[in-house]
Length: 315
Ligand SMILES: [Zn+2]
Image (cartoon, rainbow, N blue to C red):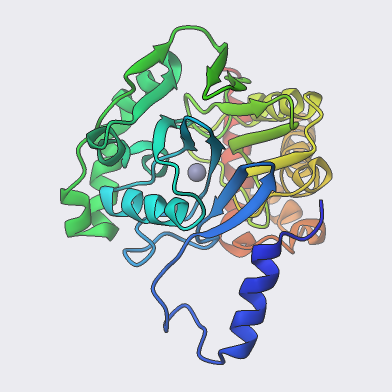
């Protein structure tokens, strides 16, 4: 994939404007075109803050003659407004459908904003079930960093709930598949596959440029399997849940290989009866993944959590 023009433009602008730093400008999503009428919207690749409205993830949209299909609605109505403004900077076509492919706050707690404007919200039953199960926790966590903005959040679930784990949708003449490839980063995570253009919106199954986080609800072994199912689609472009879009090779380097590392190396340590502390120390230096942002905050924790999961066995 060639370097997306918006990135070049953004970089040039920043070179021209010496004061172009995050502190000097309001937070913006960076649009990157990844196909014909298909865009990724890239948020902060570091931690989420009140300034970035919790948008430390990557969303996307597809423009059709009948309306825009948005993938992900952001963590709050303010985040949703910023998403809408970013889309409006690219096309006058209104957002008509919102597909939510995750249950963590940044995937869907902006639904109310789009619902009030008449958009149809679509999700798999499995995703909605996870949203309902975790909404109270996620609202609490949002309040900790987003303050007043979190008070405006009103959970709105999908209008169109799909009972299967894979479904073909035709929206505005565009065919796409909404797929649950298995457990991964969080319960109910799903992907959107555009077969004609071979683009996958991989949600939180793929983290590019920054280290993935093994959360208490993540299932590392199944996540590796799910990654392989996504790779088997042979996408030309992978839009990750966090970070910049890229090739399948890039997704392998930044996510697939790391999942292999965790499962294989920690699994071997367990077979060898190594203790948790010894395993973490032994594997904590992994230079092949040092290029990933947040390596220092996440890598040791990921080894720890993987060890405990593999030791506990399948759940
Ligand atoms: Zn995420």
